[in-house]
Image 1: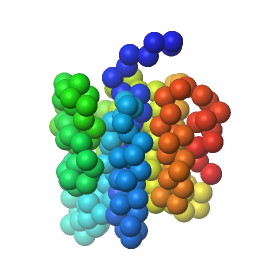
Image 2: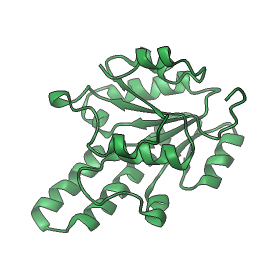
Image 3: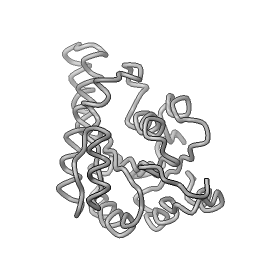
Length: 205
């Protein structure tokens, strides 16, 4: 595509695990503030401690997977509010028209996904689906070119994404992982020049 007019080029999922590592969220918000101008980004929050609280309730109170799914998504909404409070120029959005308005106003849209997901209900209600897969689904819904997952580390036992992520990611959409230890790679990951080599330099591992 020589003249790319898509609304969102890159979905950036800011992992909730960053909240458990001292200073990590500060570094990520500073990097996003530096690298987002002029780029067609949509920030999507992870679940982090908000989803962890739901997991605890799921085990102790037996609320069931349907309730747990929607409660965890609501946790992403809570994190969205926190990110908007920390990112200069960020705008909380819940639906397509609000993304359009935020982009036209020069703001950085941060998606609180509950309302959109509740209306479409596109993913299984299981703990195997995390905000990684939700980011992949929104890439398809918004015709995005790339998904960038910002995580505190590369994960335990080599597990980088949830088991539904690759099944949910639309064909042809790039997926890159950037860690809090290597945020210099974020500029590469957000490049809209379309270079596959640049994308691979920021890819996991």
